[in-house]
Length: 218
Image (cartoon, rainbow, N blue to C red):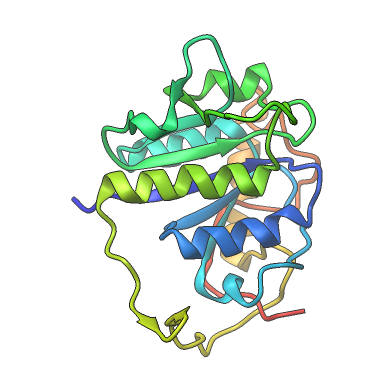
């Protein structure tokens, strides 16, 4: 089975970071960007990259975890914990989803609970305590791509060749859903009303779905 990488962002505080994350994700071969919690975001900074990336939304971390486990995918928290491993040592075993925390507080205990292991990015200078979430994601995704042996994109002059923009495009800045997915979600909500399955949801009008219609530039 081919190795894949994913990005998971949970209620990211600075919504404009999703746009720049999308740019890094497409550069380093990410299969999907998974949004957990809030679905709206600012696509500023993606420079058209959102048109080449698949998005998926889940209401809760447990839903996202189950989806990734069904794909036999490890979940790696990008965080400095007591047992975190240096990312440049490539402590990967199979397809991996990288969970990125809030820009200010890092990963919460609930986020850490769904992770199989953690990596951190070694620093060699003394001027900052941490990196911007997009910068951190870029480094980690590049290291995974090196380990996985992803094929380097062809170049044309001093730029990499960009694939043709998909013809099918949809509403930007929001993970949309179909009528069928809304019906399925409401049915699931009724069935799970007593076990707190959707405890992290703020609204009953969103669903877990793949965004096959891609974004246009702002």
